Image 1 (tube, rainbow, N blue to C red):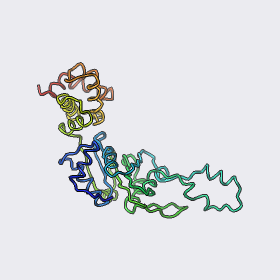
Image 2: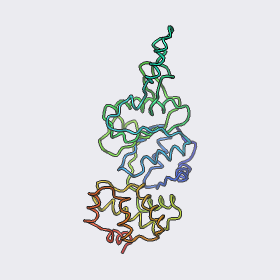
Image 3: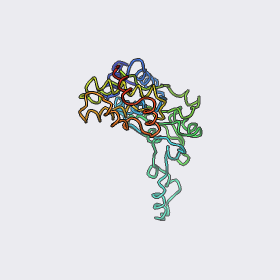
Image 4: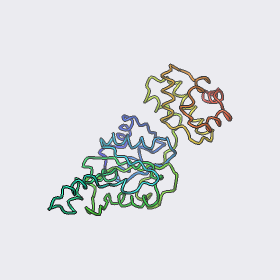
Length: 294
């Protein structure tokens, strides 16, 4: 899916769709090059840093359908690629047509395309998101190589199905296991770090224009401190930072105070163990003091 636009135009298009990038994070540049090279892009990084949001934003920039395969342990090619509509096949068999042949039961009318096949069969531009590929096993990853390398797949009853129009493929990984070199060779690689304070302020201001600048900075700085200073089991995601900012905005706050940090901390920290760690090692007053530079 080559782009008929410059890198600068591409960056501006991402911003218009609400995805904030910076030169330093190389997100726009890497996505642009992957599109121009017509190669899949493998996006790795901690949970909650906006990997999936990149795919959503790119589908808007490309004016393409977003087709998503959510990976999980035990996912196999049948659930990812296609299934036959056995109920409809059975009904056809029960009609007892004398001219019915076996191949009549294995046509497109009886095929239930799953996300991978939907991406290959789509006649319209599409972005195929293979989300959290690291949750699958090595066998499924090996199966993907033909899809990613040749943009085709073989269905035993029908033969080889080649992409009518190559989808732009995005794979994401949280790093739960190491991916194979063969998969990496087929992809352009991008590692996404948690956002800087300045970038998260820009994200908050773009999503909530009414959010006071001072409060946006305090929220972003406080979340950054939580991510960097505490060994939390689950660090706050960008989406959770946005939830926190929106909650404070709804309550009419223009400045953070310890009472409101305590009252709304559950929007950021989502386990009993992490809450205990926060109060044991930091607490609301110290967090606010550091966030405000006091």
